[in-house]
Every structure is written in C-alpha cells, then in structure tokens.
Image (tube, rainbow, N blue to C red; front, side, top):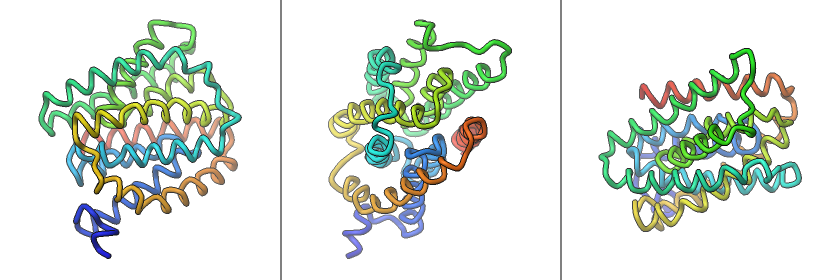
Length: 253
C-alpha cells in the first residue's frame, strides 16, 4: 500500500507538501492564476531543481485540461497563435541548456526567469501609457521566447504569459480559457523532452501524479467557485500580488 501511494519513497512530510502543491495547482488553473507558482520553490526544495520540474509538469497538464473543460468557450486562440512558434524555440533552447548545467545553476535559472518577467509585469502596470503587447511583434516575440525558456526550465512561465494576456485586459473567463489553451499545448509539447532527454518523468513520477489527482481536481472546483466572487479589478491585483510573492520565494529559497 505504501508503494502504491508513495512510489518515490519520500518522507510523508514531503508527500503531504507535494499533495498541497497539487491542490494549489488545481485552484490556480481553474481561476486563481499565479497561486500555483508557489509550488515551484516548494517542489524544487524537496526534490531538487530539475527533478521537481518533471514532477510538476503532469500536474500542470491535468490542471490545464480541467480549466479548459470549465472555460472551453471563453478561450480566444487567435490571441496566442503568434506566441507559439517563439515559445517552441525557447523550449528547445532550454532543453539544451538544461543538459549543460548542474542543479544549483538550474535553480538559479528558474529564479532569474521569474525575476525578469516580474520586472516586465510591474513596468507595464505602473507606467502611464500601457503597452499593448499584442500589437508589438518585438514584445510578443520576446515574451514568447522567454516564456518558452522559462516554462521548460522550471514550469515558471506563468508571469511572462500572464503579462501578455493581462495586456489585452480580457474578462476573467476569457483570460483563464485563453491561458488554458496555450499552457496545455506547451506543457504537452514538453513531455517527450522530459522523458527522453532530461529523464525527469518516469512511471513512478506519473504514478505519484495519478495518486494525487483527486486533490488537484477538488482544488480546481474550489478555484472555479472562488473566482466568480472576485471582481475583475481585484482579481487582477490578486494575480500581481501572488506573482510577486512566488518570485520572492523562488529567488530566496
């Protein structure tokens, strides 16, 4: 029974924290965007930089699929098509870089990616005239490239792509649905590299993901209910606050 529930043979404290991370991802993906980023430094601390990314990725795919089932009709694919080629290039660069660096350097790369996108996010929010990133090929291409790199290195591209989506000032449902389409594509694209190149996903890690899926599902249901209660403006500020907190946790952990 122990091997079934805890296939990685970690301490039960580690197992419970991982379970909590799965719950946060469910809540985040279905509405409270950014909250799941708290899982990145927690899992990196528990499992190491590169290994944690492989454990986290299937959770994200599960969350993306659930979010898409909730907000399927609200997603606006046309807004993200131009980002996909750049994001794919960023992922391929990260696959190479990830094979050349040690685990400590890997953690630093995740932290730097978060800090860069955080600066972009705050700059765009507080400048007098907002940047419409969708109409600037240089900005959208750069964000796609950085986001692809960050999502492969640490599943940490949320703030970068949130910056792009927030710049369009979409309604909550469209914001969540559009992000779900984009993240589901990118996260599924990354899986073969984790299995074949980095070897961070195997049958045991998948088993752990499956065992914890019910909690992730409950988190998704709770997140969907909570987001309905938050006005658009307050929802936007909540995202900023959580991204700031997650960046600080990741960089100073």
